[in-house]
Image (cartoon, rainbow over all chains, first blue to last red; front, side):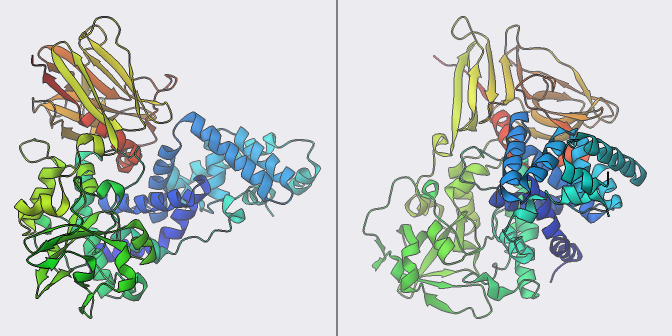
Length: 168
Length: 439
């Protein structure tokens, strides 16, 4: 007979595993390690007391910490950025454009890049972003706005296709 | 239309990744049936003591129960588990003994092979100790006893047998080809019954943890004495009703410290022997210059050359610190465990965060005064009057090459204790021993 806590855990896992795994997989260049870290997220969840905050915000907060551990050293982060840049440039069509976008992202402060990825890679709502970043929704909106402004400034001015997309 | 959104979405790594996101139920089954702390990577090292206990407790008291109940309740489809149809029923002794009732499958890695290989031809009570003579009964709805299929016998190997008992293991290839969901954590046990060896997976004695597991999850008995892998294995034998005197003949002698996948550091200093364990990929960089047996200073670096711990024993390098902790102090203790290798029970391995923004974490061996009070104090541990510093994170984050333990909040800092990195560092600090040098 499953207890209420056990049922809740299974439901939590089923509802959120794809998003947790996807969040980690975007940031870890190793599918097997991403699976292990995703499992670690839920192991931490099982061991820690329930919280009243948004489930996905709670899970991604733990995931962020575990991913951060995997790339804590500055040189490892740089290696990851290089890997992502290379993978982006060689994987996508219109690679120059995507490489320019990635360069703009890489030039951002970590906080700005972080919120842009949460919003546009992970598809989190503002409320969920606020939960992950441990701030109010208003503060999250302000941060996203600033991050978008910073991103726009780092795009190369000479890139016609990009500026066309920007509506400039 | 949001051009910025579109541009950034276009660089989403998963858009270009053709790999499928793993099925959630499959991932849940893997998590429930696999032990939490295993890796063939030598850098994993030894799990922290309390963390290992928590993991096992969670697995035993919770997740394994979930596994069994979830299959029984149809939440997990038993048919998808392949040869492994469900976890065994949790034993009533689970909570009291902390011995897990694991899934009825195990893999034998090279590290798990007992030292002192068994002779080529084994028998007990007139029956040859071979895989062909082993029957198994799964803890499934059918509960049918039957021999291991001939095509699968190649995946099993007998470890030893004596007085009607037999121990055996499944190879890594076996786990893969048989699609077993167990982890690399158990040896299987069979008892001679009606002329054949029989592994009844409904019984607690049907499996014991491997040497690798016992070495990685060394528990600490209530009196603070560190338990060796051999003592842990013997205790598991006793708890499960397997004759302890047969342990050596069934699963061998077990590993010495050098076999655990890690390494040991040892150096004489000021009439004492200083030792600690560390993952094999870590490096110890001694900063001690001058006379042999003098004050000791060293740094420990991980496989990426990041300094993860500093030690100073005696001399000017060892400093007297006084860190206020507790609700009214400036340092919040998140975890505190004994250091068995230091004879004084007041020696603790403490993990916590300095208040501030962001929070700065630190692990340190220290003496804790007034623990539990509104204001407590962390001071250096002393051995025969010699000051001992062994810590991580007390250096400023800006120190080039040193580990940076900054966290956004306490929850994140707590979450770090679940990481392999924390376990590695806790291993290094927690295995510290300082003993008098004789002779």
